[in-house]
Image (tube, rainbow, N blue to C red; front, side):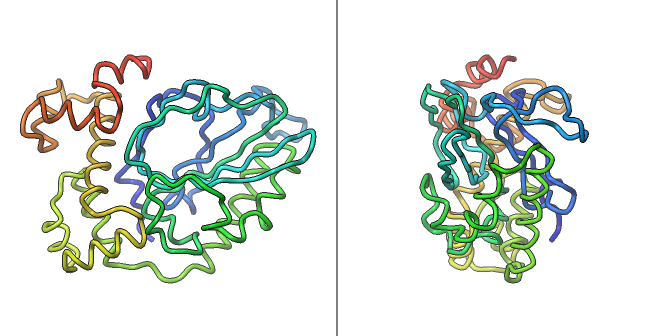
Amino acid sequence: MYNLAELYYPITARPGGTGEFSPSKALRPYIRCYWGTVPAPEADPAGSLALTDKSDSRRAAGEIIIPDTCMDIIWEWDTATGAAGGVFCGINDTPFEVDGDGQTAGRQRFAIRFHFWAVHLFADEHLRDVKNFYGEVDRYFRSFRKELGERLAAARTLTERIAWTEEYLLRCLDNAGSVNNGLMNAVHALLQAKGVKTVSGLSAESVLSSRQLERLFRDYIGISPKQTADLVRFQNVWRNLYCPTPQFRDIQDLVHSFGYSDQSHFNNSFKRFAGRTPREALVYAGK
């Protein structure tokens, strides 16, 4: 599959946080990152990073989670009792705050963050109901618990944990059905336009009717083409705010380039997804 990740790199509300680990080249078109228990700064005798019980950046106390268009499998286990379980987080379209308890001592966590266009290749069910979904991983990934989840606690290092995860993901890809070219063409056009694309424009580029696009996006992504475009546009705006370039010198450049009618429209749209004004979001991100 064409590596759509070369066109699009979503970020969190605090992109400078630690605890994200990149996938191998073979999985980059599908996986945004792995995250979870932060490794110790020193390596173990075998040369791989040892694991500690430090909490990760995504679920730290008081952490704000903004829509990043990704979907996550999160697996947790208690190192003392061995009790383990996992959840699947679908695609979100609203910001929310994680409970302030963070990660308790003795518990570890490992998670896979999927790009929104790739989840259906690994899931056992259609994704029509994943918008703002948070529930048992078994509902969408029936083999995950037995083939990977229950093994993760036995990994001695982060390197080993990631290696086992990638073996599992590559097996899933081998067993996956064919990619829907119409959907992928539409997603490619959407990412290339940085979310500034109408449904009629997507329809013309993908040679699919608006009704066909609506069905494909809801079945394979969980939200409509319009909702997907809005989230992709927000992520591109946020990335340009967080990492400004000469092309976007100020807010007005963003307003014009991303198709907002005026600054008020820009601010309202941004706050809808970030839960903050652009200035407040930058302060929260440590800028």
